[in-house]
Image 1: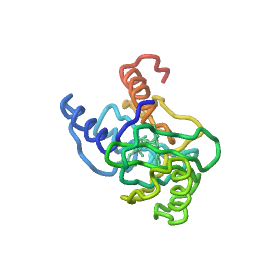
Image 2: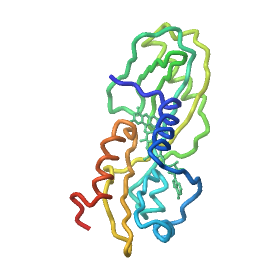
Image 3: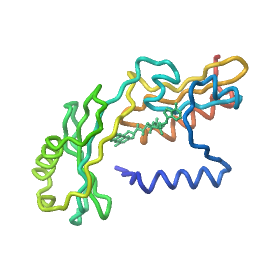
Length: 194
Ligand SMILES: Cc1cc2nc3c(=O)[nH]c(=O)nc-3n(C[C@H](O)[C@H](O)[C@H](O)COP(=O)(O)OP(=O)(O)OC[C@H]3O[C@@H](n4cnc5c(N)ncnc54)[C@H](O)[C@@H]3O)c2cc1C
């Protein structure tokens, strides 16, 4: 199974986009209309922000938490496939191991929860005893931008075009290249109905 190291991958994408001529202007977009006043084509990849930007009430957060441990030299990753809200995942990244996981739909308080940390550690150490004495390096919390289904769709706004690309939940990295390819088709007018 391919494993993406996000703190390496995201700067790589920024560098790659920059080399392709992309410029970055950080800031908050108030509405698609505000963006289309400036640009004739807008791609909305706002994640949870699509609740407001696309006025889409079906978008919701599902909280996740990891426990990051110093890597004792693991050579295999492990993930438990289940529909339960808690599972075992142990992803070695060379110097650190990212352990999980949990999914709490509707919870948006991103304060790390010590009970959750304990439960993740107990499960992962039971599955991989070599982690028993590993130093805890972090307990990051994130929100998955969920939707009953991913939305990759074009919409006309006056003379401008808005292409939506959000609602990837816990699979946004896996789906990213495929969704980007479809966004490109929609921007270029391939298979667009609107
Ligand atoms: C704990 C956890 C584990 C995960 N594990 C995996 C995994 O194993 N595999 C996988 O594929 N995915 C995983 N994911 C999911 C993945 O991280 C998401 O699906 C992905 O980040 C979604 O990408 P996105 O660009 O659509 O949204 P986001 O990454 O949420 O980005 C949206 C961006 O839009 C910005 N924004 C929002 N509103 C506005 C506005 N009005 N103006 C300007 N900017 C705005 C936000 O600030 C943000 O930068 C995991 C997520 C979590 C939390």
